[in-house]
Amino acid sequence: MPRQNLTRFAWLSIAAAVMTIALKSGAYLITGSVGLLSDAAESVVNLVAAFVALIALHVASKPADEKHQFGHSKAEYFSAAVEGIMIFVAATFILVTSVQRFLAPEPLEQVGLGLGISLVASAINGAVSIVLMRAGRKHNSITLTADGKHLMTDVWTSAGVVVGVLLVALTGWLQLDAIVAFAVGCNIIWTGWHLIRESVDGLMDHAPSPECQATIQEILAAHTTDEVQFHGVRARVAGHENHISMHVLVPGSWTVQRGHDVLEDVEDALRAAFDHVIIDTHLEPLEDPRSYEQGLVDLTEPAAPTPTPR
Image (cartoon, rainbow, N blue to C red; front, side):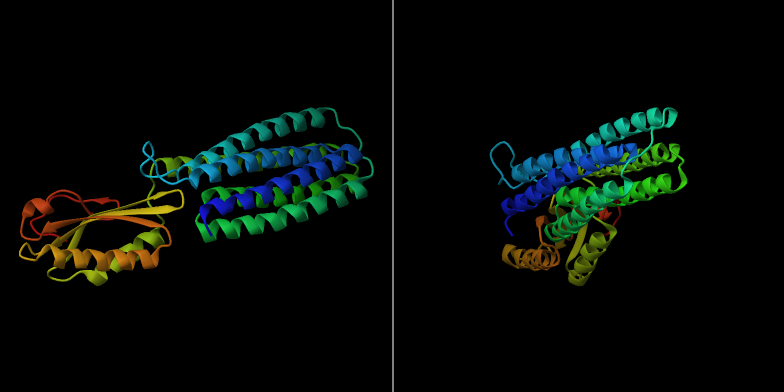
C-alpha cells in the first residue's frame, strides 16, 4: 500500500475518537462519576492525537526534495512526541479532578446505564486499536503503532473505571471513584512517557531491533569469504525506513565490475530481508590497511584498529 493511503487509518481513528467522546461524555453526565470523566478526557486526547497522526502521515509520505534529500519519514516521530505531551496534559487534568472529588465526594446516579454506554465506547476503541496496530506493524509506521497502543491503553483504562464505578455502587464508598480516577491518571502518564521516549529514540537515529541486527549479520556472514569481507557496518531506523551502511573489502586486483557484482548480491539479500531499506555501500581494497584501520566491526560496536580486517 502506498504511504499516502495510510491516512485512511488516521481518519478511522478520528471517527472512533468522536464517537467515544460523545458516548463517554454522556456516561459522565448521566452518572456524575469522575472516573468516567477521566475516561472521556482521555478520548479527547485521542482525537487530538489522531489529527496529529493524520498530518504526520501526510508529511512522511512526501518524497525527497531539494531541502529534505533523505525524505520526510522522520515526521512520524513528531506525531508520537505530540501525542505523549497531550497525554501528560490529560493526566494532569485527571489527577487534579480526582483529588478534588476525593476531598468532596458526590453520589453517583444511574450507574447501570452509564457503565453500559462506557462499555460500548470501549468496544469501539478496542476494535480500532487492533486495526491500527496491525497496520502499523505491516507498514512499519510508528504513528499508527503509537495510536493503536494508546487506544488499547484507553480500553484497559475504561475497564478499570467500569470496575471501580461498579464497586462504588455496590459498596457505597464514594471516594473509591476518585481513587480509580487517580490510578487512571498515573497509568496515562506512563503511556505518555513511553511514547515520548520512543519519539526521542527515533529522532536520535536509534539502531534497529536486535533481531534486525542479527539478520544483517547473518546475511553478511553468508557473503563473507577470504576475498570478500565487511567492516564499518552501521544501521539506523528513520520512520518506516531502515538505513544500512557498510564498507566492503575485496582484492585490489579485481575489476570494478566484479566488485560491483558482489555489492549487488549483498544489497539484493538485504532488500529481500527488509521491506523498506536504504543501503549505502563503499568498496575498498582488501590489501590496504587504510581501508579498515578505523570504523566499526559490528553493528553499533566500536572497534580499535586491527592489523587485519574482520
